[in-house]
Amino acid sequence: MISVITIAKNEEKTIERTILSVINQSAINEIEYIVIDGKSSDKTLEIINKYKSKISKIISEPDFGIYNAMNKGIKAANGKYILFLNAGDELFCNKTIEKILPKLNCDLVFGDILIRDKNGKDSTIEYDFIDDFELFYKSLPHPCTFIKKECFLKLDLYDETKKIMSDWQWFLKYFKSGGKYSYIKTPVAIFYLGGISTSKKFKKLQKQERKEILNNFYSKKKQILYKIILKITKKNSVLKQIKKLLTKIGILEIYENYYNN
Image 1 (cartoon, rainbow, N blue to C red):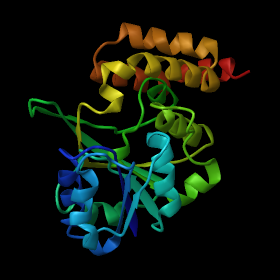
Image 2 (image 1 turned 45 degrees about the vertical axis):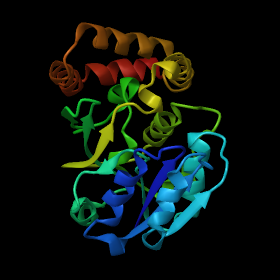
Image 3 (image 1 turned 60 degrees about the vertical axis):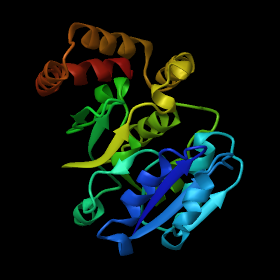
């Protein structure tokens, strides 16, 4: 069973499309759907309750931020895997879970995500591989990542002192601890731009948290190396080819071993 967890607070304009994308899944019998509402003051809870007969658990109470709410969802989940699909986002199609279920063969499994801007323009981001360098400058998006619940029990829940970047921090902890992954070349979810992670208001805090996390997981020398690689490569396709070449001939491994000494 997969526990799909939706976090919402004052999302009356977007929560319904998220709920419908879950309860209309062809594999709905394989889904435990949990909705965490942060005691919304608008009609969010009213809309959630409209579908309560098809939602496994509804928790509506004040929280201390998005990661506090996400941790509540993890604790309440009974599924083997957890997928976070927060208010406003939606599963790619009605057969998404049905297609993914047979391919859940690792502690962490992810697919592609479709990004939709405010004008309705779509672009697909493919995460065909993730390693130390990739994680230096980007994170896996929650809406397309299935995580075994037991991984949270081993590595702990999300750090609630972080307001924006705790998910990236958790993924770094997972991979730095030797965690494995499996990639599925299929779109899993549609992510709508405009949430907390894309708001200008939070850019300063995002930068501050990012710096703190980088310093915890990467040495100063390694940060310099990776920043140089990022600076001289602008397009993702070029970046990936250079990274693969450096990995193939062992240069990055030599640098990494040196920096870890």
